[in-house]
Amino acid sequence: MNRTFALASRTRKELLRDPLSYIFCLAFPLVMLAIMTIVDRSIPKEAGMTVFHLSQLAPGIAVFGQTFLMLFTSLTVSKDRSGYFLVRLYATPAGSRDFILGYLLPMMEISLMQCGIIYLASWIVSLILGTPLSAGGLLLSLLMLQPSAVLFICIGLLFGTLFSEKSAPGLCSIIISLGSFLGCIWFDADSLGGIMLKICKALPFYYCTKLGRSALQLNFGTSAFWLPLLIVAGCAVVLALLSVIVFRSRMRTDLA
Amino acid sequence: MNHEKEMIRTKDLTKKFGEKTAVDHLDLTIHEGELFSLLGVNGAGKTTTIRMLSCLSRPTSGEALVGGFSCLDQAEKVKEIIGISPQDTAVAERLTVQENLAFMAALYTQDKAVCRERTERMIRLFHLEEVAGSQARTLSGGWKRKLSIAMAMIGEPQVLFLDEPTLGLDVLARRELWNLIGKLKEKRTIILTTHYMEEAEQLSDRIAIMHRGRIRACGTLSEIETLAGVSGLENAFVEIAGKEELL
Image 1 (cartoon, chains in turn cyan, red):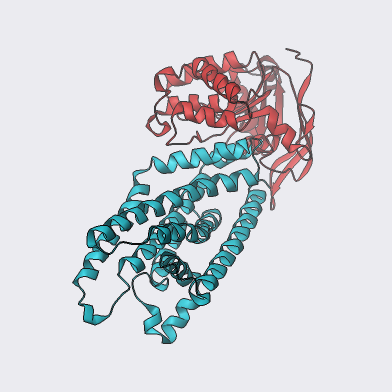
Image 2: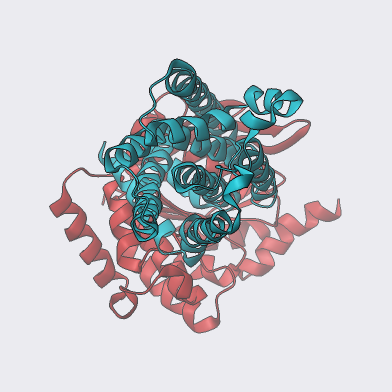
């Protein structure tokens, strides 16, 4: 495990020392939280729009932030692969398990920190607005958003392994756009219904947001909590396995 | 150092990429404590040979033994006794010099005290004290090269592969690295690839001239000069590799 921790520590330090990580993974989601809260205050109550209420918005913003972890995972992996850095590491006694966990573990830690900061900011805003969010709900939602963190990080690992330093971030921005739109972060697909809801439900992003929202509201209904949890956890496991298989296979090809 | 003990041995070592043969039935023996230089033009097969010997590429056929371990079947054992400094400096850009060394040390040993001791020793050996706290991305090419070689050395390898270690360096930085490599060779086997004839002349115990995947000449400088019938390594190289190029 020492090698895994050494690799994880290196990934963590490199990410935490990159100012862009803070801009994309923290500052941008927090700015969106502030803007959308202002938007929510500007919408007349008669409109009946609840998607930007803090209890809905905070988990959506947290999922939005996770999509940038995918971007940074893909950047880190593809950058390591593009130069000789990974070649140097391949010549050490470290194995594929060490490499994969060396990317995954620090990203999970950063995901927890990121979500924690977003939820703390949301809680402070909710206190200021006089509509305090449940601390227990926030904590549960923080935990329930970790399977979606694995899902996004594994997509990043997959893209970083399969594509070049130039292509991987481009593909990730497509997922970021798709994930935030079809994840229903910025609109309420359930009230829209129709084909739009069907499309959203066909992808895991919708369930990531729904799970975070239901957990925050301590709503443990089957369709609100348990089904999304099952789907997100299932997708996370499948993507984790797929990224491990692809990384190992690419490592074998590199060493062929 | 026992200069008679075989540290590297290859037999019919061959690497093909599709139709192209990069390394062609290479038979090579390198002894413990030797500094062995592989010379050749671009595409001669030097880097591919180093990649196979450091278990970064599987041979198409033939065998390679490093420290008595097979590169094919005992890659884990081989990786424990080798260090490699690739062509590109390959360092973690946002880690400091000290952190880069400690990071590499942790990949070889579980003991934190040993990691610390090795890191400090490499900083002293490579005179990295003044940049120890600087992030690698801020270093000049010369410092990065020194760090790269120090990272290759931190696992205390019995065999050190240096792939064009002075590529792109100015004269002073190159001379400084030569002095360092000269010191390192007293304690371990070093395989060096280079385009610089002067470098090979200055540092090597033996030299091999590779061309189109094959070794065309191998021996001490004087043996190669005798074989080519000219004096000076550059003339000998042109005589051996250049003639074939014209054929």
